[in-house]
Length: 200
Image (cartoon, rainbow, N blue to C red; front, side, top):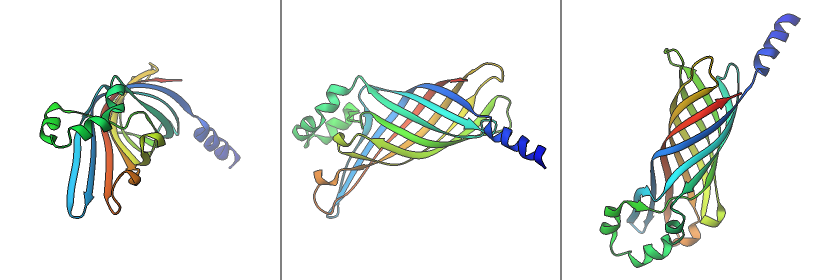
Protein backbone atom coordinates (compact mmCIF):
# COMPACT_ATOMS: atom_id res chain seq x y z
CA UNK A 1 0.00 0.00 0.00
CA UNK A 2 2.84 2.38 0.84
CA UNK A 3 4.51 1.60 -2.49
CA UNK A 4 1.32 2.38 -4.37
CA UNK A 5 0.94 5.65 -2.49
CA UNK A 6 4.54 6.58 -3.25
CA UNK A 7 4.10 5.79 -6.95
CA UNK A 8 0.90 7.86 -7.05
CA UNK A 9 2.54 10.86 -5.37
CA UNK A 10 5.50 10.61 -7.74
CA UNK A 11 3.11 10.43 -10.69
CA UNK A 12 1.15 13.55 -9.80
CA UNK A 13 4.23 15.50 -8.78
CA UNK A 14 5.93 15.02 -12.15
CA UNK A 15 5.35 18.49 -13.53
CA UNK A 16 6.69 20.22 -16.60
CA UNK A 17 7.09 23.89 -17.40
CA UNK A 18 6.60 25.44 -20.79
CA UNK A 19 7.50 28.82 -22.28
CA UNK A 20 5.28 30.03 -25.13
CA UNK A 21 5.65 32.64 -27.88
CA UNK A 22 2.88 33.09 -30.43
CA UNK A 23 1.43 35.21 -33.22
CA UNK A 24 -2.23 35.88 -34.00
CA UNK A 25 -2.51 35.06 -37.71
CA UNK A 26 -6.18 36.06 -37.72
CA UNK A 27 -8.11 38.16 -35.21
CA UNK A 28 -11.52 39.79 -34.95
CA UNK A 29 -12.99 42.37 -32.56
CA UNK A 30 -16.75 42.58 -32.10
CA UNK A 31 -18.77 45.03 -30.01
CA UNK A 32 -22.54 45.48 -30.04
CA UNK A 33 -24.95 47.80 -28.21
CA UNK A 34 -28.68 47.14 -27.81
CA UNK A 35 -30.83 50.02 -26.53
CA UNK A 36 -34.54 50.82 -26.85
CA UNK A 37 -35.09 48.22 -29.54
CA UNK A 38 -32.16 49.41 -31.63
CA UNK A 39 -28.89 47.58 -32.17
CA UNK A 40 -25.58 49.00 -33.34
CA UNK A 41 -22.24 47.28 -33.57
CA UNK A 42 -18.79 47.22 -35.02
CA UNK A 43 -16.90 44.13 -36.17
CA UNK A 44 -13.64 43.73 -38.02
CA UNK A 45 -9.94 43.01 -37.85
CA UNK A 46 -8.00 45.28 -35.46
CA UNK A 47 -5.12 47.36 -36.77
CA UNK A 48 -1.60 46.07 -36.19
CA UNK A 49 -0.85 42.53 -35.08
CA UNK A 50 -1.16 40.45 -31.93
CA UNK A 51 1.68 38.71 -30.10
CA UNK A 52 1.35 36.31 -27.16
CA UNK A 53 3.86 35.52 -24.41
CA UNK A 54 2.97 32.76 -21.98
CA UNK A 55 3.93 30.19 -19.38
CA UNK A 56 2.31 26.84 -18.55
CA UNK A 57 2.73 24.30 -15.78
CA UNK A 58 1.44 20.80 -16.54
CA UNK A 59 1.32 17.50 -14.65
CA UNK A 60 -0.12 14.00 -15.04
CA UNK A 61 2.09 13.38 -18.07
CA UNK A 62 1.20 16.85 -19.38
CA UNK A 63 -2.49 15.95 -19.58
CA UNK A 64 -3.70 18.86 -17.43
CA UNK A 65 -2.26 22.11 -16.18
CA UNK A 66 -2.60 25.84 -15.70
CA UNK A 67 -1.20 28.74 -17.63
CA UNK A 68 -1.01 32.49 -18.06
CA UNK A 69 -0.69 34.37 -21.32
CA UNK A 70 -0.17 38.04 -22.10
CA UNK A 71 -1.63 39.33 -25.35
CA UNK A 72 0.26 42.28 -26.78
CA UNK A 73 -1.16 44.47 -29.54
CA UNK A 74 1.65 45.80 -31.75
CA UNK A 75 1.50 48.40 -34.51
CA UNK A 76 -2.02 49.67 -33.88
CA UNK A 77 -1.44 51.74 -30.74
CA UNK A 78 -1.88 55.16 -32.27
CA UNK A 79 -4.99 54.16 -34.16
CA UNK A 80 -6.42 52.54 -31.05
CA UNK A 81 -5.79 55.61 -28.94
CA UNK A 82 -7.58 57.81 -31.49
CA UNK A 83 -10.41 55.37 -32.02
CA UNK A 84 -12.92 57.37 -30.01
CA UNK A 85 -12.32 60.63 -31.92
CA UNK A 86 -12.31 58.94 -35.32
CA UNK A 87 -15.46 57.04 -34.48
CA UNK A 88 -17.28 60.21 -33.44
CA UNK A 89 -16.31 62.01 -36.63
CA UNK A 90 -17.19 59.09 -38.88
CA UNK A 91 -20.26 57.91 -37.00
CA UNK A 92 -22.47 58.56 -39.97
CA UNK A 93 -20.18 56.73 -42.38
CA UNK A 94 -20.52 53.23 -40.99
CA UNK A 95 -20.41 51.60 -44.43
CA UNK A 96 -17.13 53.27 -45.32
CA UNK A 97 -15.63 52.17 -42.01
CA UNK A 98 -16.65 48.57 -42.62
CA UNK A 99 -14.99 48.64 -46.03
CA UNK A 100 -11.71 49.76 -44.49
CA UNK A 101 -11.72 46.70 -42.25
CA UNK A 102 -9.51 48.19 -39.50
CA UNK A 103 -11.20 48.61 -36.12
CA UNK A 104 -10.00 49.25 -32.60
CA UNK A 105 -9.16 46.15 -30.58
CA UNK A 106 -9.02 45.61 -26.81
CA UNK A 107 -5.35 46.56 -26.61
CA UNK A 108 -3.13 44.54 -24.25
CA UNK A 109 -4.66 42.00 -21.86
CA UNK A 110 -3.87 38.82 -19.92
CA UNK A 111 -5.46 35.36 -20.09
CA UNK A 112 -5.33 33.00 -17.08
CA UNK A 113 -6.60 29.50 -17.76
CA UNK A 114 -6.76 25.81 -17.05
CA UNK A 115 -5.73 23.49 -19.87
CA UNK A 116 -6.21 19.86 -20.89
CA UNK A 117 -4.05 18.25 -23.59
CA UNK A 118 -5.55 14.96 -24.67
CA UNK A 119 -4.29 12.28 -27.10
CA UNK A 120 -6.29 12.14 -30.33
CA UNK A 121 -5.01 8.88 -31.81
CA UNK A 122 -2.10 10.25 -33.84
CA UNK A 123 1.57 10.10 -32.77
CA UNK A 124 2.96 13.38 -31.41
CA UNK A 125 -0.46 15.08 -31.68
CA UNK A 126 -2.79 16.20 -28.89
CA UNK A 127 -6.04 18.09 -28.79
CA UNK A 128 -6.13 21.14 -26.52
CA UNK A 129 -8.97 22.64 -24.50
CA UNK A 130 -8.46 25.91 -22.57
CA UNK A 131 -10.91 27.61 -20.22
CA UNK A 132 -10.27 30.65 -18.07
CA UNK A 133 -10.76 34.38 -17.62
CA UNK A 134 -9.48 37.42 -19.45
CA UNK A 135 -7.98 40.23 -17.38
CA UNK A 136 -8.37 43.53 -19.23
CA UNK A 137 -6.89 46.92 -18.44
CA UNK A 138 -9.44 49.03 -16.57
CA UNK A 139 -8.20 52.25 -18.16
CA UNK A 140 -9.45 51.00 -21.53
CA UNK A 141 -12.99 50.79 -20.18
CA UNK A 142 -13.07 46.99 -20.25
CA UNK A 143 -13.54 44.28 -17.64
CA UNK A 144 -12.46 40.70 -18.10
CA UNK A 145 -14.83 37.84 -18.79
CA UNK A 146 -15.07 34.12 -19.48
CA UNK A 147 -12.74 32.94 -22.25
CA UNK A 148 -12.22 29.58 -23.91
CA UNK A 149 -10.40 27.94 -26.78
CA UNK A 150 -9.69 24.79 -28.76
CA UNK A 151 -6.46 23.78 -30.45
CA UNK A 152 -4.02 21.13 -31.53
CA UNK A 153 -0.43 20.48 -30.44
CA UNK A 154 2.37 18.75 -32.36
CA UNK A 155 5.56 17.86 -30.52
CA UNK A 156 8.19 15.16 -31.19
CA UNK A 157 8.78 13.03 -28.07
CA UNK A 158 12.51 13.81 -27.85
CA UNK A 159 12.76 17.48 -28.81
CA UNK A 160 11.75 20.13 -26.23
CA UNK A 161 10.20 22.33 -28.93
CA UNK A 162 6.59 22.00 -30.08
CA UNK A 163 4.04 23.87 -32.17
CA UNK A 164 0.42 24.67 -31.29
CA UNK A 165 -2.49 26.17 -33.22
CA UNK A 166 -5.38 27.69 -31.25
CA UNK A 167 -8.74 29.29 -31.75
CA UNK A 168 -9.56 31.41 -28.68
CA UNK A 169 -12.59 33.53 -27.81
CA UNK A 170 -12.05 36.30 -25.25
CA UNK A 171 -15.17 37.95 -23.81
CA UNK A 172 -15.14 41.40 -22.21
CA UNK A 173 -17.54 43.50 -20.18
CA UNK A 174 -17.37 47.14 -21.33
CA UNK A 175 -17.76 49.96 -18.82
CA UNK A 176 -21.47 50.74 -19.09
CA UNK A 177 -20.94 54.29 -17.84
CA UNK A 178 -19.91 55.14 -21.40
CA UNK A 179 -23.31 54.02 -22.72
CA UNK A 180 -26.95 55.05 -22.13
CA UNK A 181 -28.71 53.68 -19.06
CA UNK A 182 -30.32 50.31 -19.77
CA UNK A 183 -28.13 49.54 -22.77
CA UNK A 184 -26.97 45.94 -23.26
CA UNK A 185 -23.33 45.94 -24.29
CA UNK A 186 -21.18 42.98 -25.31
CA UNK A 187 -17.61 42.84 -26.57
CA UNK A 188 -15.35 40.00 -27.70
CA UNK A 189 -12.00 39.33 -29.32
CA UNK A 190 -11.35 36.08 -31.19
CA UNK A 191 -8.09 34.91 -32.70
CA UNK A 192 -6.38 32.09 -34.54
CA UNK A 193 -2.92 31.79 -33.05
CA UNK A 194 0.25 29.88 -33.93
CA UNK A 195 2.52 29.28 -30.93
CA UNK A 196 6.01 27.84 -30.53
CA UNK A 197 6.60 26.17 -27.15
CA UNK A 198 9.72 25.20 -25.23
CA UNK A 199 9.30 22.50 -22.59
CA UNK A 200 11.67 22.11 -19.64
